[in-house]
Amino acid sequence: MRFVSGDEAAPLRDTHVWRGVWPDFLLHDAVSNRYWSRLWIDFPDFQFFLVEGERVLAEGNCVPVRGMPLAWRAAILDAWEGQGEPDRVCALAIIVSPELQGSGLSSRMLGHMREIAAPFGTLVAPVRPTRKAQRPLMPIDDYVQLRREDGTHADPWIRTHERMGGVVVGTAEDAMLIEGSREEWEAWTGVELPHDGDVIVPGALVPVHFAAGRGVYREPCVWIEHRVAS
Ligand SMILES: CC(C)(COP(=O)(O)OP(=O)(O)OC[C@H]1O[C@@H](n2cnc3c(N)ncnc32)[C@H](O)[C@@H]1OP(=O)(O)O)[C@@H](O)C(=O)NCCC(=O)NCCS
Picture: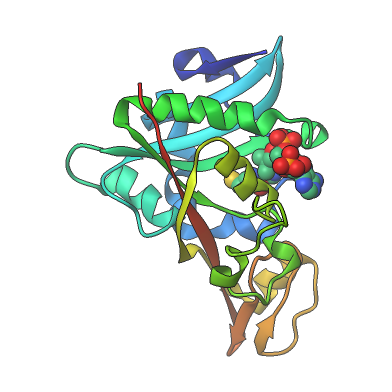
């Protein structure tokens, strides 16, 4: 197993490890869609694959930013539109190929992202907690407090970050902002959504709010900071 990045990864860029990983609606954040396809073009050294032979096992994405972004989509805006020298790296995604999830690869991926960030001193991660979708009505500030008896975090992805040296430093709203008509939401979720009000759809961390035939989803995130030294 090894990591490939930059030009060496060019032949692998259309692998799309993420295919089938995210709920469809999550692919409709306007800021993300404006820039995501340029990640490998504009920040090739901040994107990486974990490969074994020809096979892609996992993908990691991060970008250099200036100061602490407000949330996930704000980091994307800062990476492309910010002025001045970056002072930290912001994680955007770590995706393990679905058939390999649960086999311990995430720490390796996060470790490599920490190495990429080491020259900057700090990696910040607007984490999408993997178990939050099971508690869509719980405020993110309550969710982030959930710990097991041994003190480790109840959410496996936050737990992994903490085990690697990350520290929870806060939460944020509007990590992702997804807006669409009722028809679009029905197509994205496969669920009939005839009424206005708050609706829970599969894979969402919080309810989607429908009013006047339009649905708005504001996904929260948990900020985790990793101090890293080169
Ligand atoms: C989140 C993700 C990166 C974790 O990677 P992974 O290699 O599957 O996870 P690991 O095997 O290293 O396990 C990490 C922790 O999660 C737990 N875990 C893994 N899969 C799990 C599952 N399906 N359900 C519950 N817990 C799980 C593990 O037990 C471990 O926790 P513990 O050892 O402290 O008990 C991976 O599942 C993934 O790609 N998910 C889809 C994309 C995503 O949500 N990425 C994160 C946001 S960008």
